[in-house]
Image (cartoon, rainbow, N blue to C red; front, side, top):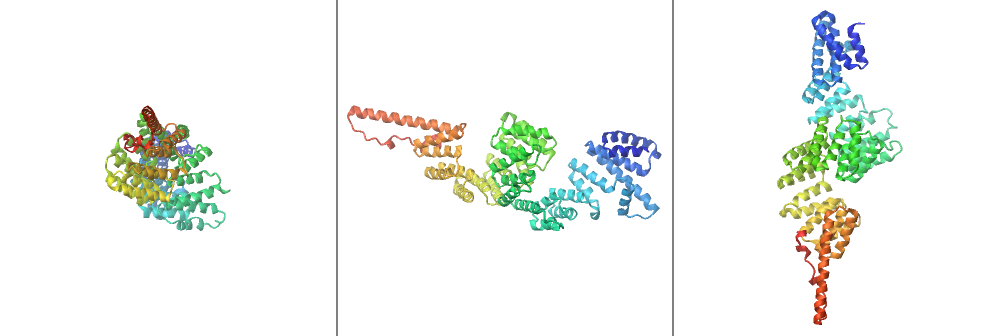
Length: 563
């Protein structure tokens, strides 16, 4: 058994670190003694050595050796052509027959090196150098994803379709086509409908329908489809389906149900990572104590994926003293996956909280470019503009969000919040918020903002009516606290005290409710003291006092606390 056979054995057994040492020695020995190996053996050695370096994540050096291997391959082909006529495709077949590494496989490895090095243009160039007729599904898939990354939608669509022609159940290609706007019926024709025995794949039809609805931003139908799929007998408690259900709850703005489903996903499979970055965001939003446990559990799974770093980042972001660490964790996640929008949002929000608005704005803009379908990306840009006092740009961004995301409660409320900043556009703000509530009558962000506007306009009766109507369907500490504020401003002090008490029962940490209660109690004590003084004076003078409480009430509307 020759030396190259020994290298081949080590390679086939996966002993790549051993291959690297031996191949390095043999390569130098061969340079000193060119007769040591034949040209084909030199080619094999170069590829095996490059494979070993690739497995050890030395991508730059591996790419260099792969390219040198291709140069040796060209020399081999020239020598064979001199001996007899061979086409390029026949030489590929001959390589496999001889047991030599395929030129196509070497080019794919060069693509992988460039991809890991984030040299995406070079990665495209090497894959495009493979003739279209010789491209395997993995080449077409890689090309399609790269084309999509650079916004080359037509080429990406063609690439995904080529994959499905050979592999009809390549579901990532299915998702790629749907994300590019290809209709579900056309995708079904390339996948399920092209299979000879698809009668027992009804569940896959539902899965495809759910994703088609999601891609067209019809999140309500997507939720309904995935829910029916998950509650059925075939895919009950399937992690992938549950994650899709949670994602569509989240995209529709139903954060509470999204958090519940993600919690189920994590409970069913603590090692599952997809969607856990969004789950961490939801836990951070709720100030949940489960966030620390989630971050630690995910980090114990792997540190090679962005989700654990993002979860750690959100946990640190809850403590101002750890804000710098949160930025670091977000950056680590971004390095692992530049297409992950959650790491951009995390870093943007932490920088915004640190008052580094220009830096935060850069990250939110990149997030909008990466994921324009995500509401939080537009919200981040708007909040940065507002903090900079650039209200017109904030209005333009919020208006654009309504166009991109549709006339749904969240973007409408976002636009309303910006319009409310300008006294000249407050009426438009109220129109936007009323429109949001007409679509979803219980959308709390719109309720809170509209109630605040009524308060500022001293239209306390309107605010009280709005809040009481909401409390018939839902009860939150903030609803009761705002209602109490309005009642106090409207001189309905006793009921205001009752509402403050309810607010503090629901959330004992509500500072506004506590402060409001204290001020109302002081005011009522003052009223009682004033009443007693008047009674004493009347008794001393012998007058019959007909007390009118309105004469002694505090004018809550003019109180600085409510201005």
